[in-house]
Image 1: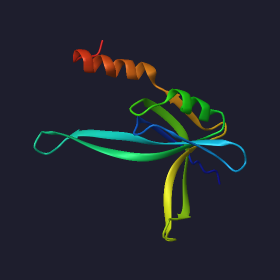
Image 2: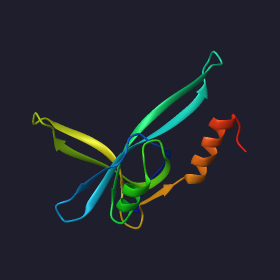
Image 3: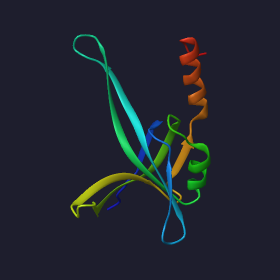
Length: 128
């Protein structure tokens, strides 16, 4: 049976990416990504809910993340959903779900055109 584990998210970076060295000599970039859903509530008022996603990038894309991405930047990421377990500082087992961007199936797209349009909306009140 064929299975698919692929996530595509479009949102804004919540904090500057953190870069760390790996034991195998490679590097990884980690950042949070905010996605938002907007709707009108029962009273006709606008409402919004934001979800936060942890993104981990491996391979050649780490350099792009390190040099080009900052807090607030709009990006699209494609990767697989992975849950891993670890022990916290008190020794308690925890689990974390991440979007893992690695290999040929993973990618990070910087949405600079989207960012420019958002900046213009903020500056003028309407998109051009």
